[in-house]
Image (cartoon, rainbow, N blue to C red):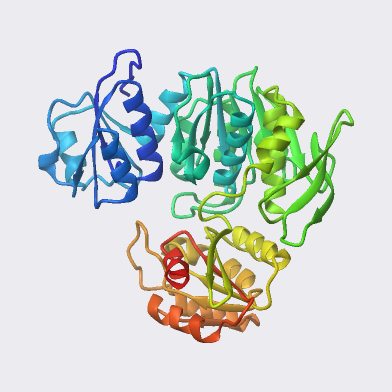
Length: 458
């Protein structure tokens, strides 16, 4: 594979430069003196920001965009071999690398490179850890899979040896990384369009843990079943966190305020006790915070600084984000698109002040909906009033054997209260008619379901 010399800036082309991760990497290389160009399907706020930084972007991906003077080309996992630009790069024999390989090469330039992994919670935990490192004046370089107001986007370019990034398991991307320390938040069945089964996913996380050096740290959720299978060959120091059991960092005395924000005491192995308050909702965020606290302590940050960092964090866009109100109905948007995440969001909503709860869920990808059909049906049957929108296809084509109507029908068979409405206009009209003062409406999913909430608030 092509090796980048970061001390000798070159010219690079990014296919799919408008992606949340790709855009950040492009800006990072631009800051290092590289000449960057790229393409995307259409203009967006992200591409406008890249253009403002002096990066030329082609809208539309055609073979003519590719010249023979690029030193290397970066592409995302969503780019297929039949993509015109991809094919042209191959014809010209240009050095090519997938996005994850670029992240791995970048990580090698940092003394302390932290990869935040897990089936759920990566963006939130990366954000929490970033707030802590910023509060501690550690000047980190940050790559986060969401938009964070504190860093005005998804990338922060620091000038220290600290690098914090999300490490995603999909297509085994994180196995191309070179972390010195890592967090594993949880290991669940997901991305079954790529992985064979849960054992295959667990093996992927095991290989990720095995990447760590002897002087590194693995902060891992001690409640993961058969934890030893994942950690048995890990050379790094292993530090556990959790709530229900005996862990190196444990949350005790857990309570919630009137808006669902957790208060808890962190108890360490040596008996040290520290009180924490979070400005995000839900018990799942206690787990996320525990991992960030543990990693920060191992990085030499004091508890008083960690407390200030976490107090300053009030969420990332699309993670139980309050969008505003319409007709005195509070509208919240949440990225939850897996049964475990949905349950966490519904549980968090119970603590949030409201009369009735309304949820519109947009399933994300046909393969995930089909693979976890019964799990989705079970957890969504707990929603008080549920609307199911059409499946967001993302990278997939409709196979014809799974639909949102089928999901809604199965939810109702399990005692749920689901209505299938195919169009966003129908869904908005439904909520305008049925939601009442002091109700809570959650738009839920990883697609464009947030548009419903934004339109209602406008």
